Structure formats: C-alpha cells, structure tokens
Length: 164
Image (cartoon, rainbow, N blue to C red; front, side, top):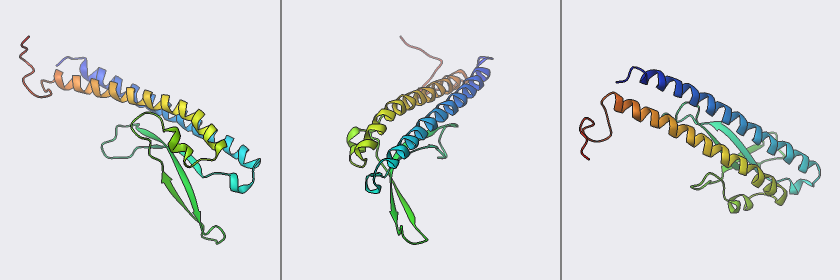
C-alpha cells in the first residue's frame, strides 16, 4: 500500500465533511428564504390562501449514512383540532422521484399558486445543492475504493494479475 494513501484518505474525508456541512448550511439558508417569502405572502392574503407547503433540511441519521449527509425535503402540513388547546400537526413528505429536483407537478398538486412560484425558484438552487452533495459523496467513495485496492483488496477477483 502506498504510504500516502491513509493521509490522502483522511484529507478527502475532512474535505468531504466540510463541504457537505457548507452545502447543508446553504440549503438551510435557501429554506429560510422560502419561509420569509411565504410569511410575507401570508400577510397579504386571507387565511384560506396561506398554503400548507414547507421545506426542511435535515441530517440523514441512518446507520449507513456517510458523515455529513443531509436531505432537502418538501412536505405539507395538516392541522387537527385547531380550536382546542391540543392542536396537532401532521406532516406528509412529498416524493422527489429519481432526479435532483422535485417535479413541478408534485409541488403544484399541494401548493398555492404563490407558493408554487417561490418553491419552483428555490428548487432550482436545491437541485444544484443536491447534485454537488452527490458529487462529494462520489469522490469520497472513489477514494475509499482506491484505498482498498492499494491494500490488496478489490472488487471481485485477483488484483495482482492483469490480462490485456
């Protein structure tokens, strides 16, 4: 194994964590823009036009999740027993699909027209953030795979013999 491999692996890991942390902070800032703009719109509209759409940036806490992994998720809220002292909120997360962005049709189905306009604009930025986070994860995985090869491991077969 190359002497530099563990040092490189540690440096890439530190870079990946720092980059994911910065991307998550940027995503949280974009999410707060949604809430600020939504609050402004609600102030100009009657209550029945307020909307139920929300967005959340949260750390992925799954056992196999990479350190620093996060998700950006759109959801709807529903309140039950609003008049009582024990009002409850139910959250339903919207499906993103296979791409980096939520489909317009998914958001359109649950958002007020004013909320849809804000969400679509911000979803452009969220899509870019998701792509960059996935790219960071791919770099991290590629370095780990290479480190395994350096250690004599590999992915299926004899790494010492090459037949061209």
